[in-house]
Length: 376
Image 1 (cartoon, rainbow, N blue to C red):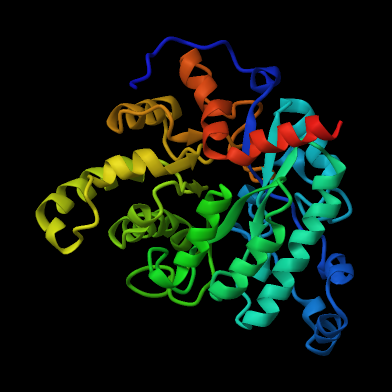
Image 2: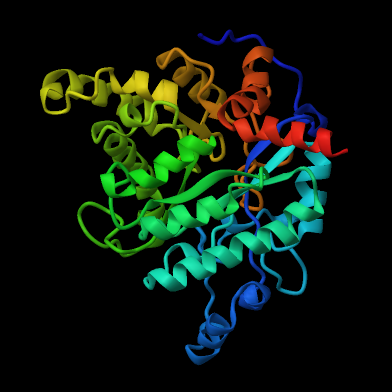
């Protein structure tokens, strides 16, 4: 479906009432917050190895960079941006009035080299999210934090959280130890498909290898810009390795991937597939068709000078208005004022982006609603 270009109503906070915010970042205030959720052994290891002295925030931005936090979303007393539920309620949940907000916690548990330690800290992080966030605001949902470099332990953590319908997605980083299409990761996709959990692939790096194809960069800006190339690589990997052929119901959400690279990538992927498709006989459809059916993209940041034109061009190029999901990327500074989305999108496309596409992508949102109604 190609979107029309009729203008929607002007921008204001109430315009987003009933939206589904697909990217909110709760920040762990410090490792001590995880102590109640770690067993005796791991609490001792934190002390013995002085892990409590480390800043294990896994963020796409340097702590004091302007993009790390919007000025009016900063917290007092040096607290980490995003570490206060009350602030998130004031800045986003109460102001924009979303129906749901999905928490994506970026913490060092995802990238610890010790597989056992990573699994322990992921368990603790998910339990902390459950108690300190989900249980304190019914509008919140969350991604299951896993350390993907041990598939067996990752699957066990997904199974452990599966009974809580407030966990609606599995969270992975775009750059880890292997490309995401590799078959050693397929057990994660298998259980995610079975449980109706999309795979959320977030910008970020485990720093197992250089973040660019030509080596280690010298500056942060190089790393930041290279994130879009990582998303291209991972999408191509998942398509070529046959992930979506093997798991036809699986959905992948690219979170903070940017958008402007997508059009050129699709054109090149389709063109090349037509010439060398014999080596991947399981890829029976053009990559653009596979992406249209299986992959969704959060809208912040929109890395284009004209945000509306970028969105409309991609809608027309992929012949779909189901690609994009509303997000504020709180507390990162991606937009000014209340302009989360361009204010001249058509009414139909606007509704698709702010809620309808997310409801189609995250089946547990509707299930959780029904479960809450029954319990009442």
